[in-house]
Picture 1 (cartoon, rainbow, N blue to C red):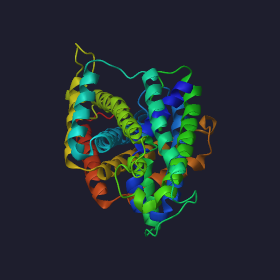
Picture 2 (picture 1 turned 135 degrees about the horizontal axis):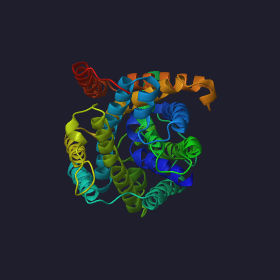
Picture 3 (picture 1 turned 45 degrees about the vertical axis):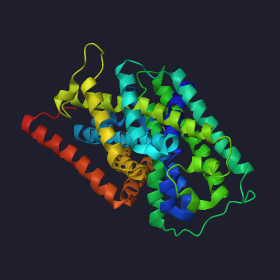
Picture 4 (picture 1 turned 30 degrees about the vertical axis):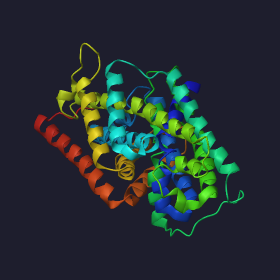
Length: 405
């Protein structure tokens, strides 16, 4: 179980702690920590639903499988397509994070080069093992520890959290929660480990909440220290807030924070890009997306077409949209994925439940509210891609007359 917790924690910490604070602070103002609590609670509700379903379906695929089995192939497709779109946008955000921390003067170029390098590594056959994941997690935690050390020892606020005068509203708090949810979404990786861990019916339901609560506690500490150091306005002023916190006092620890953010981002990309391509492969085999993506390269034994297509889309995104937009589009697509998770959990029988049914209800409503609160531009852009994919699938099903689970 420890390995599963490590994988989930690494996916979450690498995915958001270095970058999600900035857009969230701009949206929430003085309600930033409230927004973190909202995002954490919605993530917890989603985690309980994922854990229950993972115990019943201990196989790879996550909510793509749960939606097909518990609801219908249509809702499975909504979840799978949401995962592909959302995680592709997440790859863009991670690549841009690397560029922002390591080469801010050429952020987009660095991001594109990182995506191409990771794609080359994946095509070459290097797989991310649990041992590599542990190293990446340690590096990320060391960098975060440096941030917290500087924030506590160098804070001009003398250890008293000071909230700036930034305007705030209930809508802003929920929008910020939508941004911060991006930082928790990595626990879905645990739900896809059904075929990779021992005793998945027992391991996965326990690992998901443990990883989530540990990361939530860490985020709460980081947020409190960052607010204490410079206030919410300063936290929201940069796309690399943790680096800037350390750099503002000319700390010698700044290179460690930069390197930690870069390595964490590379680790997430190493995991996400093949994950998206393999979900695309599975959907192609079920005729959910064009069958052209179902091709397996015989020499490399991997879905080369899907992998190269995902990489090309990510490169296009990093050259055209910014970090905030990438995070927002990710939320627009990923939150429906978890809405389907909660809806599937609501159909479980009483003897299949491990958590109270109202948690799934709150999780479903929470996903809907957080999506609705995200910026309108992201709703229009991400929503268009989602609806287009779902509509194309429905047209194909009507023509073939085949919609088997």
